[in-house]
Length: 356
Ligand code: GTR
Image 1 (tube, rainbow, N blue to C red):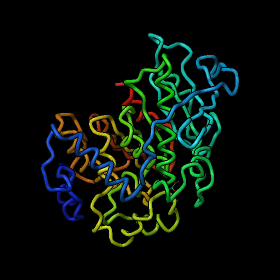
Image 2 (image 1 turned 30 degrees about the vertical axis):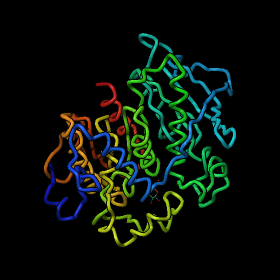
Image 3 (image 1 turned 90 degrees about the horizontal axis):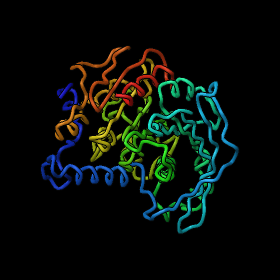
Image 4 (image 1 turned 180 degrees about the vertical axis):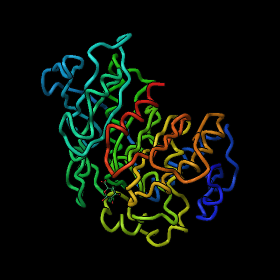
């Protein structure tokens, strides 16, 4: 394990031990994985409603040729039906007009804006690599505010449902996946979920909950995302909870200033998607997220892939430097020069992993 001494110094909890003390093996990994999801639900992000939803899609506009005719963009309205009634939100899907074998891989971006294209969504470059891209706008699901009336938050309110805005956004991505499964032009072995910053946290949490996403791309997700919380620089539990209590369940705040008491750390959310592909992107100047702590999480989480006989993180035994790209294993990490942003450089790193 890379940076083993540093992980020990920070007192990061063991990944490969059950809460009851049993050893984790390749045979019981799935049981441990579900335990990780349960711990993170209980302590940090909350639980998704425990019911089966039905989804249907309607055209919101006629499909249009895009990207010089290389792509087709569909604007849909997805309706999710559950015990509390119907809930609808827009879903955009842009796929290559020519799909070899009639199918294409697809990345679902949970985005900050409803615009298409968008500065975080370089559609033509993605299409040119043979990949489709879908997008939802997170405020269409539930507002990024400390209120519980909007969107799905109003239909499944707290405290009756113990969830958070991050969990609601992740839940919506899974409902998109329900819909993708009804189509015959998507390669289900290659569907990924991506997000940046708070939505990078969301992408990780979505991958942990929904194994149908075979790729998880967490861009600059940092605190309460891919960064080890213990002894982290920049943002802490206390700071993030004070600013964004609604991203979490109230229990998380108990660890403000008491990170050492957490029965988990963020390598759990990274490992909860093992042995699927997870790639964590950091940015050199993003000290608030803390690239060193982001890399540490990958070092610790890699044990899950290795336990299963898979290539985990193929990295180095030191903290990362700008320009480092460690994406040869199924758990990838890279550190882009410059600041917090979802850049084309980042997309290209994710697409490199997607297309091998
Ligand atoms: C910051 C927050 C970070 C990150 C970021 C973002 O204010 O402290 O954890 O999530 O917002 O989402 O842009």
